[in-house]
Length: 396
Image 1 (cartoon, rainbow, N blue to C red):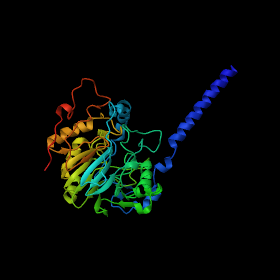
Image 2: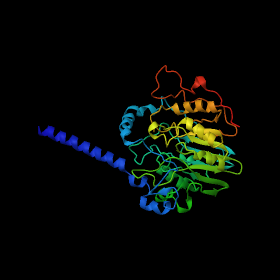
Image 3: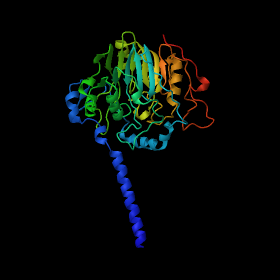
């Protein structure tokens, strides 16, 4: 019996040590990854017209979630439907083919919202997230559904790095630190995010913070911080930094970057003032009825593209992380159907693929073979699958 008691005690001690080790790993680096405190943010953000009562606000009422009495249903959905967003097989990657000289208008999509934009011979990096997990912890939180197509150190020199907001799938601490080492370009960010960056070691002279409708000029490009309908926050405190979309204007070309946003009538005003656009990058994934006001669905992305006066639409914010309950391939399938109804020209690259927007390749279905983990064998093809795929005519 003493031997059994010693064995049981040893097992319990081992479990306890293992649990403590897991908790320590989960908490490792948390205070730094969470970003700047409200006290550090206050001097920068309090003068903004968007800031009142201690936080930033959308220009129209925007609930982040349905009322509390619906949350039990949301939690149940989270438990029962979380697997639906997984791909049915490996996601094909392309090896980025980045030329020595930047093109007139081209994009290399690295997955989710991370994109290398070439415009009028300059390069702008959008929402760079190279981390394995979009979370403050190395242990918990959504992980990548596909590898990064190329290491961050392989990126060519860029002229600016744009950030849309401070959520982990758009602002990644390890990626920021890597870019501090490997690039010399400034980070151009919405108000408040500069405090995060400075705390992570970004030099003061590499931080440009803007409010909505403010602009800066870098390397001959005008970067304008424009309205989005979303929210911010890296832990319990929400809306302490601003969120935005971005307009990149060169001598000849204009690009709109949606970042992460719900649909808003502000897109029409942005299009009237700063458009029309040769290219819009629109978020199409991670939508749900519970947060419809802050994440566009594919049909709304096509509508926003039209409001902005866009010519070519490239979908972002899908395929890389499982952040909602829809099937993995559903966003792009719905996008193709909606774009076909409105005669909108699409480019849908694989992660890592570079597309010349002025001479785009024929639209190629690479997602049907991947499918979704929740797809039923023998189920009819969803809109936009191989059986109904067609080249969408350019919008003039």
